[in-house]
Length: 69
Image (spheres, rainbow, N blue to C red):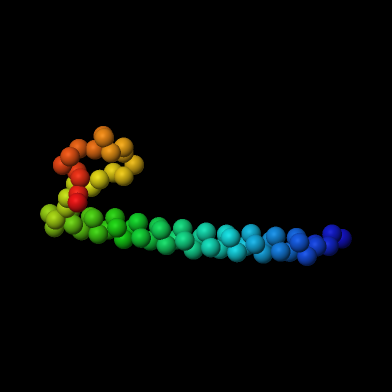
């Protein structure tokens, strides 16, 4: 029979805690993204939308019309 050491149990506890925290924050991010997507879709339906800026694109490649201040 294999008996876990105290260090093995602490390592397992740390992994469980880390996974729990990561899952919690990931779920929050997913929910916020879904809310933003729904809000934007509603704005489009009402005609209140502005061109969105894609933050993943370098600044120089964005068109001046897409800049929002």
